[in-house]
Length: 428
Image (cartoon, rainbow, N blue to C red; front, side, top):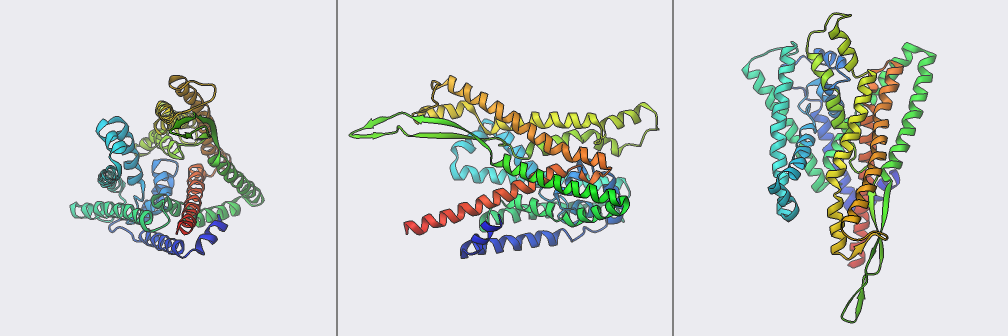
């Protein structure tokens, strides 16, 4: 990765893009330091520290800690991510949107992007209102009233919209993957806080704390290696193209492959599964705590994010969402029809339904492996955090997958741009 960035820095065009991206990230970090008025941030941080294993804790990590400080960028990229996922699902469910995405060309893509922007503002408005009501109900606001509510909610919505705009600027003038890079910057910005928490843990545990931290660092490095290996892994199905004669020339006959990534759904199954699996604990956190020994207290302990039942449910949800996203992104029937139209076939299988059935079978196998991999990466920090008594590791798996995935995508984008520049220079 460092070598690729060094090579890209030597190219004047890419150097300008890298500098522009760094300036955008500086603006993003500056916005994370501007607090929204009328909020007692000390009370808010204490409250969210107790909610670190809920959906609110996930939002705080995704925003780089801005959610716990009620800054202008507190909502971060979450509204845009949610709206993108919703529009993607609606594109499959609504025929008009499906035709627009499939046959609309560049104009169709711009139309869908515009719809996604409007959906982002709507979701930010709902989340901003819910965030305000949360702070008001728990006495976190220094002043409350209609004017204060308007200022706080509008600040959150404007901040989220501005973050979306920053991501689009990185896509257009920077190195690409704008929203992903902003999400990456937010998560990485919490590294100093994590180091500080590790130091406090060592001071509390002494020699045992040092041993735990060393084992934890080794585990994180091994996790990095696993994520890098699986992210690049793919199953390649051999494809043969039939020969055909046009005039006096013979076309086709070459062999190719159909690549299928092992983890084609990325981190989305983990994010969705964690949001749903931790929803009961999040709702319970807003309700009065039942008396110890009662049925309500036993039920809360059973659905708590540190319980065995939660780990099992979380793991199964990741597998379910992995299959769901795999079927959305990779349609065996469509792939089979495309191969048939292009004169291609998979050796040993007739074109049409036999080919689509074989592709679906392979898709099911590699999706299962990818889903188990995501589940292990997601629950491993939970198990370690439970063993060490450190809740800060509860969403570490999600963060590691995002950080490594975005880093790999950025490196690939830089390599693609350098390769394209070499081709342009050769053609000129």
